[in-house]
Length: 294
Image (tube, rainbow, N blue to C red; front, side, top):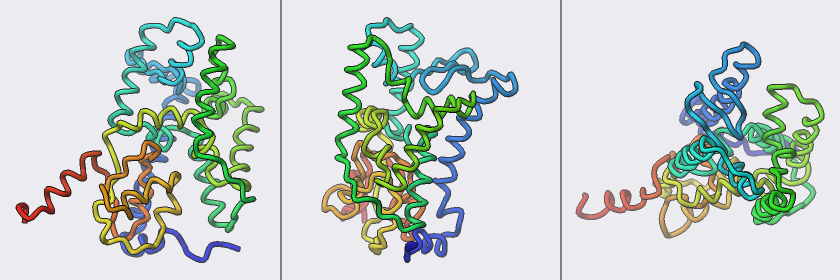
């Protein structure tokens, strides 16, 4: 049976279609735009960016390296190039500022697949097979990839990493790799909602470690206006991160390392409860609401 409540409908009626989807559209523009930059070289000979999401060179000047891949390389016993180290530092500093798991929602192409599966589950009213996967499994997966890299003395994870497979598949049309993406889609659709990104992916686990100290945050600074529609929980890929800020008595800032800063909660909220701010927003809010500030 299809869902009775249309998620985000009230936000569309109150704010308009664009404001109820603006962050989703911007995320898709970011994800497809990044893929387009990598496609320009093979398709048109315009090499603005060379490489892939693991390691690239922009305009033949700026090196960018996935710090997770660099970590695996070091654990595997290889000596990384200085440009790889510089590239990893640049990426790490960037995600410390904007949020570690921003990578998951604004860069990773697999996010488009899992978001589609989740959307279709809601539309079809699929409840799944009751499969519950512990949220810590992704951290076990992260540890396992490092152990395998150490034992095998190679970055073995990148051979089966769905992100790398999808990226190669889009750019170079690698056939069999698409079966992995199809499996993730069907597993998320029929077995366990958002299982890959939210419970299994070691890449997301790694970036959540960086996200623990990231500065850019979503805040429920207008939480008194919440009408309990639950739309934010329905669209959030990590709904457990919302409650402490929205329903708790403490800070209204979502400080969880697993928040992806996807901003869908901002889109679908008809009462404008959520906004993008910083991890220190609670101090600003308290100051503005103090008697001295009145």
